[in-house]
Image (tube, rainbow, N blue to C red; front, side):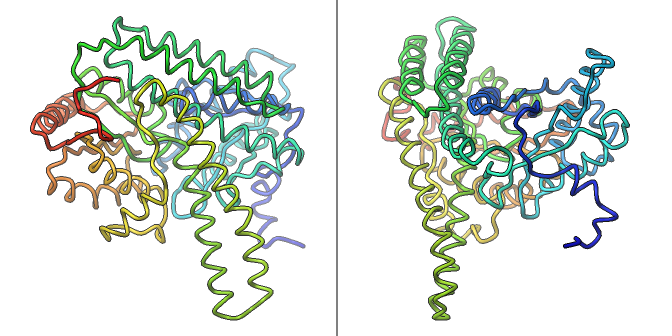
Length: 460
């Protein structure tokens, strides 16, 4: 069948597609330091040669080949791929073979511009004759990031389960570091140890990941939490707890957000960033939610065929949802035996929070649902401040600002927007210092309450 317009947009079909990447070098943009490296090791475990590209060194290239109307992550990732390919061509010379690389750039449906990054970046790569043969592949929210079309089916099944586990582990590594680093006995102790823990996890994933032998991974996580706990100077009082919500790339990519977590720690805060696992869980939850609506519609229509099809879709999605919940709980519990890191939010709880306050709806979707819901949960969990981190001009984050800013101000919860586009804002540090001062006042006033039932000044 001929696709309408394909003769005009053929490159979007021929060079931006899902295909078996076995035998190629899969180029992955860096995002969250722990998660990106564990993602690459999960690919390695199933035989895919994945490579995390060096990040942020090509930002000037990303800006040169964009108009400024694109959101910031598009410029960062475009710069990363152009910088890598130029460096690789210079390194290999005539041996450089563009068709041996595959650029991995996931996508999402809905109103976010993220869904068009890979098409737009295809146009830019095509401007360079030497890079025209570098294909772009992706996974999509449309089928809950299935990899069945980019690797053999058996490998895809293993990868999906392994990758979910490593994403949750990466979230936990982050939360261990954020819990311990502000109170560490010696500066640098936490970062040095967490890097070693990451290396051990990467080695374990690559050696045993394909067999889904996960006990070794869980043991490393538990040991990391147990050991990191000993780094805490228990004489220090607990700091105000700051929750970061917002757009997933910028909030988790340290260079893009100008290392806001460390800045807030330097100014006297303890920070928790919304997790990557939360987004993955949301995609599965939202898919099941849509499939339940189809079941209800089939029942109303008394259409047996429609009902059978809807149930055939819903049942495996529900199984996946419960698998994710069980795995996440299992891994978090191993760390929580030793260290009081923050648990992740249940997506169903976020939806109930939004429905109760009638502030937003999962029917609208986008990351706004998670950011608004998580901010409200933080308010009830004893946090002392909320930061909304996002790319300048990001639509879902602008929605969050419109809802959260007046609401949290009314509730006297310190709140600040932190938009980024690569420029250095001259008043950024003053604004963050002021925000932390307000968060400390909020904690001292007793408005923060207790954290998960524990006194705010207590360490584990």
